[in-house]
Image 1 (tube, rainbow, N blue to C red):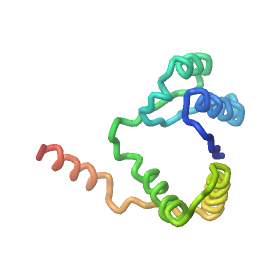
Image 2: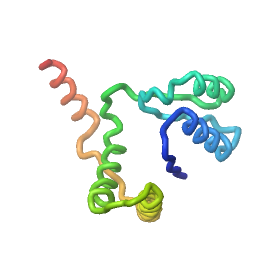
Image 3: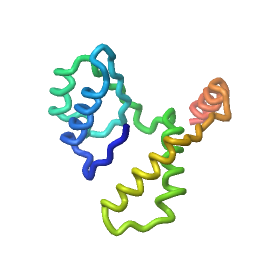
Length: 131
């Protein structure tokens, strides 16, 4: 499931959450991983969350790197679609994005870490030691 919305405000986020709430069977808990956008922390979203206790929000740390693979996917989208195209309308851009995502989902290419978790943690430890 994916949705494209013209704005990224709390009202659109709540509509997105309502869609998830409708689509996911009631007996499942829903864990949502979010960045620290202020949109996700408004009073309206907080009230929605209180009314939907099966939803649990997890916020990524500011400047976190553990979502690098998601960022890598967006880089692929940018390189293969957005850099080589011009869209005269938001509708045309949305249609192109929807088509690209559908094509990707039909034949996805996984991103694979090239380092082990221990190698990553060792590198982070060295970096933090040198600060």
